[in-house]
Image 1 (cartoon, rainbow, N blue to C red):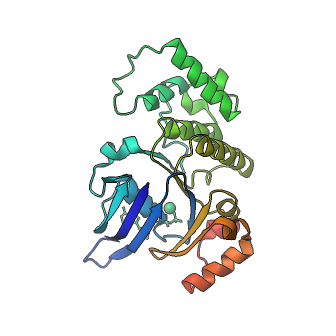
Image 2 (tube, rainbow, N blue to C red):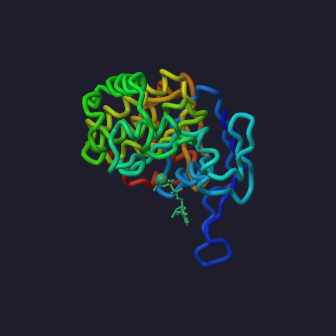
Amino acid sequence: MLEVVDVSKTFNPGTVNENPVLKGLSLKLSPGDFVTIIGGNGAGKSTLMNIISGVLFPDHGRVYLGTHDVTYMPEYRRAKFLGRVFQDPMQGTAGDMEVVENLAMASQRGSFRGLNWNLKSRQFAYFQELLASLDLGLENRLHAKVKLLSGGQRQALTLLMASMNQPDLLLLDEHTAALDPKTAQKVMQVTQRVVSADHLTTLMITHNMQQAIQYGNRLIMMDSGKIVLDIAGEDKKELTVEQLLAKFVTASGNALANDRMLLS
Ligand SMILES: Nc1ncnc2c1ncn2[C@@H]1O[C@H](COP(=O)(O)OP(=O)(O)OP(=O)(O)O)[C@@H](O)[C@H]1O
Ligand SMILES: [Mg+2]
């Protein structure tokens, strides 16, 4: 479903600020895989997602989505294969538009022709049903401006929008990190439901080790631009946070440097 082959990326090459961030990284996901990614600050996790989604192009290596070689495909063209949710609840939705307008825009992704659409009652009912499934009371607020929603409601809405067209790959970049613990848990429950309902192939970066163990079928640890640990199946289910920390030290030769991770 996703194949990243020997990808390298250096920022500011040839300057004093030269920063080799990804160093020959390879990763293959099968359909339906739900992979969690953890790693130190600046390990290259978000850069990897930026390369997968076309925000950045790699210096070396290839990226395949299904059978498409998307390595140099512009971001707007591969957007139809991908769903993405960022850490910042403001980023994935249009605050000045209504909840229903945001959903309509997402459902017509790629063919949206402005706000002159005629929302059919069937579609309205479908959106209402989707929102009810979040269990956040949003099914009665279809005409509310998105900027009036809480951060958690907004992230849950972004998640619906990112997944409603059954993307080949769902990318989640610390999408619960800006939320309070209770809301974060709620959004993770929604995430689990959305991912399992459509068997979405998912890549989720998190700084929360418990989350990384609890969710998904495979866990990847990155350090200095490389994958240093890849654990799946029963081995992953039996992991504890302590074991994971110890494995990180063994695999990378360093203590884990991620302030948010160690605080969570
Ligand atoms: N567009 C860019 N231009 C220059 N440097 C960048 C750019 N994006 C990221 N970097 C640098 O690349 C390194 C890796 O950043 P990246 O965001 O991929 O790390 P990360 O693993 O997501 O870390 P964090 O846990 O802090 O989110 C960092 O040193 C960062 O400053
Ligand atoms: Mg990041």
